[in-house]
Image (cartoon, rainbow, N blue to C red; front, side):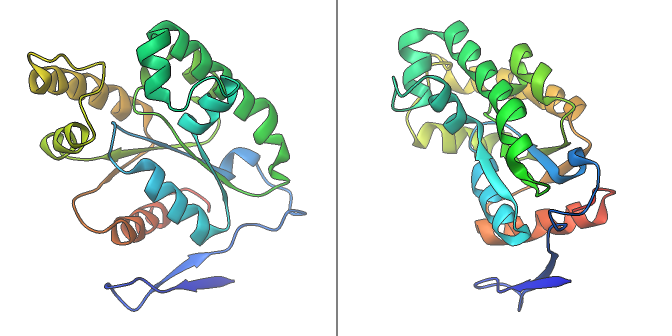
Length: 212
């Protein structure tokens, strides 16, 4: 059974398979997709669109981390600035554990998409919980495009005031290698509208060996 979704401003639409019925026995890991990539590559936006198209539940690691923090902060950037990197990574690891121990068992046979934080790949505690729980997708975007997006939102605490572009270049190169090792599928995105990049991502997944 297929479901049809109209793409505004693009092709007439595309076909996406519905999720497996809840009473169908299958390997649970096949229904979980982890979207990784650097900050502002569009993981969360693409994840939400894809989850809607597939009938999956969507989770965002930043939101889960804020939940794990018990509402003490309004944003993950606030955690990082006020509590420091170590505390942020501890809370993120707690969020990863909660996702595995609580959210996955309550999927009731359905699928899920989890958008990782930009730095989750460097959090050994979080990745110990998440690394083998599903299909790992690297959302790859050009370095310069991401730097511009990052700075448009205001310089984050992990980039220095003096040399933010050089810092970003080093961070990008480091995490690019880590996400490449992490991924079973690499998908490239550009400045196209989110709906178009999401359509392309779905096509990439359908061409892979991932069972949606």
